[in-house]
Length: 502
Image (cartoon, rainbow, N blue to C red; front, side, top):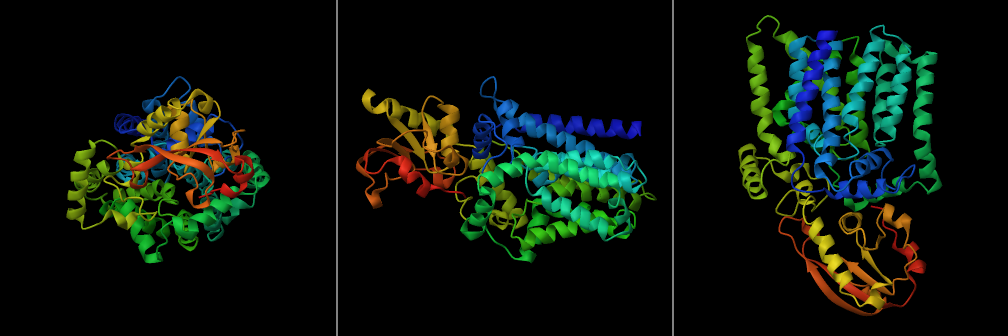
C-alpha cells in the first residue's frame, strides 16, 4: 500500500506542476470573474451554482488580482484527481504500470485537462467523483462499511460544487442495485452516509427553494435555444472526441473490463446509466466527464493485464498515449500565443478531419478568431477600462447618480473586478437577484445595449465608446457603450421585467 501511495503522490505532484506551469496564461475567463464576484458576496447559494466554487475562487483574490493563484486552484483538484485515479487503479488490482499509465492518460485526456486548467464547477469533481468510486470499491472488497460516512461527506461537498453529481450518485446507486453488490446499500452505514450528504447539501437546496428554484428556470432556458441539442449517436461521438479520440481506447477498454468483472460491474453500469441520463436530458457533452478517471483507471488495469506476458509492449503503450494525447494539449491548455494557436488549431483540424463545431455546446459561441473558452479570456480589462473612462468623463452631477448596466454577468463581473469603484448592475443571473442597488437609472451607462431604443425608455441617448478586441469572443467585440439620460420609468419598477436567467 505504501508503495502504491508513493506512486500516486508522485503522479499528483507531476500533474500539479504541469498544470501550474500551463494554466496561468491569456487572462481571466468570463465565468472565473463571475465566480470571484459571487464569492465576494458569500451566500448559501447562487442562481446558477452552489457556493463552494465561488468561495474558493474569491479566496484566491483576497490579496489582489492574481491569475496564477486563481489557476492554482484547479491545478490542486487536478492533482488530487490524479492521486485518486492511481489509487483506484491499485484497488482494482493494478500494479505500478497500471497506476502510472492511468495517471498519464488522465492528464492527457482533453476534457479532464480542461477541467484542471481553469476554475469551474467541474474542477471539484475531478477529485470527488473518482473518490466516491474508490470508496465504493473498497467497501465492495470487504472494507469497513463506515467508509459510507466519508462517502456521504464527499457526496455532500460535490453537491455543494455542482448539481450534476446528483446524476452520478443516482447512477452509482442504480449500478449497485443491478449487481450482487446491492447488499452494500442495505446497511445502517449507507443510510447514515446518505443522511450526511443531505445535511451538507441542504443549505444550498433551501436557498434555491427560497429563491424560487432559479437553477431550474435557467436549465429550462438552456434547453430552449441557448444550448446545442444533439442526437444520441452524436453525443456518443462527442464523448470520444472530448476524451482524445484514439486515446479514448483506454477508457473503452476499461469499460469492457468492468463489465466482465463480477466484482466491479456496478461501475460499468454507473457509467452507462450516467451517459444515458445525460442524453435523455440533453445535457452538454462535458456534464458527465468527471466520470472518466474511473474508467481510465480500469482501462489501465486492463492494459496491464493484457501485456502481462509481453512487458515489452508497455513502453509502446506509454508512447502511443503520448502520441495520441500530447498534440491535443494546446487545444485545452493555454500554452501557445494566440496567433500560434490559430495556426496550430487549423493544422490539427485538417490532420484529424474534425471541425471544432463537432463539440460546440452553444451555437455561435465559437464564431470568433479563437474558440469560445480562449476568446472568453480576452478583452475584459479593456472593457472595464473603457467603461471606467466613460463613467469618469461624466459631469460630477451626473456621475453622482450614474450606474453601469451590462447585458450579461461576464461584462458586469469584469467591471466589478477590474474597476471596483464603478457601480455596476445587470439583470443576468445572480446580478438580477442583487437588484438595481437603489439606483433610479436616470443616468445609466448601457454596456452592450441601446438604451431601450425600441421602447423609448430614456429621453436622450448617445454613443460614448465602442469596445473592440481582436481576440475577444465574437459577441463581445464591437459592442457599444451608451450614455442614457432621463429614464421615463424608475428602474426599480422595471427590474422584475428585466430578469434574464440563462
